[in-house]
Image (tube, rainbow over all chains, first blue to last red; front, top):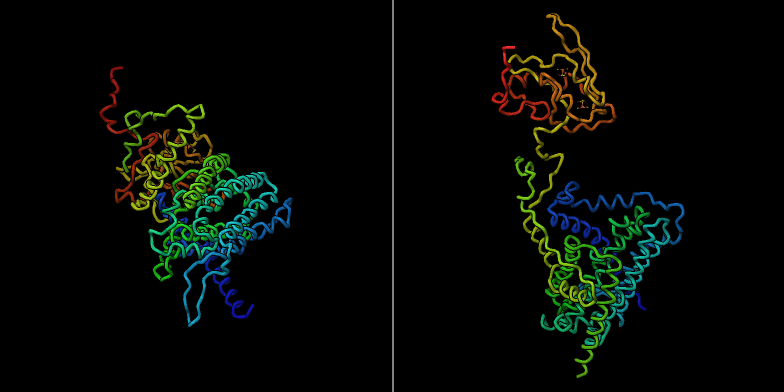
Length: 329
Length: 205
Ligand code: SF4
Ligand code: SF4
């Protein structure tokens, strides 16, 4: 491995880490503002102009708060759990092409850390490992609400994973590759080539699974404040809790990248317009996460399992079979 | 602020109606039909549209409290006030002590003395707001409409015992001269059109 490649990769990793940690913070600002506007409130207004510095205030608070390890918790696991959530979210980002490749100072940059040939499997797999954070954190804590949350995590885990895997299978069959760059190149022919037109069912199923994956509102049952306090986060404070938080928001951003890349043409032909188009699509999907939080109620854990196993999984299987038949003849 | 819509307790005329709820399906086929119906009726999109519409309308209802305040009703019972007579600007309180007697949380303490004109005068008068429950009995019992409730509700304090005294509650004399003393409309106040309703005492007894 030559040094230039090593340096380039390290720079890319650092840039992605910095940008998405910052985006996670700014994401909370947008979330509060948008939720507030949808509920006819103003949201944060006091820190800085229009509450813009609220993010900084929260950051300072999280960093300077005492790091409490409560008695009766299982120390090592309790400490490592938030790191799992945050780390896996960023590790998963390694196989996401954030931009088309571009040339700067005569040097071609591929804005993807590693173009794995199993890209999409890798992303889904590593993101799924992120659920070990809530699971372990909930079980290591010494209260019932965290334990309930851990049990729910396991339930969510076994439910959505099968849907996201099966729904993505049909597009994979069409593209014939697992790399997201190949997915993108398959759809470069413009809007009519987008996979969403040939695989609408897979698109909707994957989108639903993405909500379960990130634990956002219709499936926000892992840390449902009005039922089980903060679930696995109940006993966490300061930066350890912040890591869970960053993990959740980074996951939202990354999944918002993955959905357009697979179904909506990604960055298109690689021009600047295409790159801006990708950012627009990501912004829409991120906005949709916030939008549903204002509009929709939460489902119960048993309803989620019912939905995933009895409705979505059969649909996904039928979709795969039909896709196969169509491709065969 | 208009109070009519809040004072109208006749809910039947206010657009209330019974919601038409179907019976829940009991058999499998009925449940399946319900799932299909709910999936394709697009109810979720109605919810999405409602919140998006509110966001676009941007009809914000937030009151940014320390800077903005909501108006409070004229009958609101907050920190007490002592009124003056409109005719002579002198204090209405005659030192009868009824308010001290009736106060159910025992938070009024007063003392009186005979002044140089041989009239009874209040020398000490405090209300312990830490004990007061703002029930309004003192305002109701006062024969002179002297003690009433005011609209000052921001009485956060560093200790539970928090007193207001006679000078604090009394309408300032310059405010009185300017004619801006407000009459209280709540407990013990004279109802509107009192003059027409009052019956003359028959003199031949
Ligand atoms: S409002 Fe009630 S509790 Fe307060 S001083 Fe008057 S009578 Fe006493
Ligand atoms: S405030 Fe009213 S009730 Fe109390 S002593 Fe004075 S006149 Fe009597």
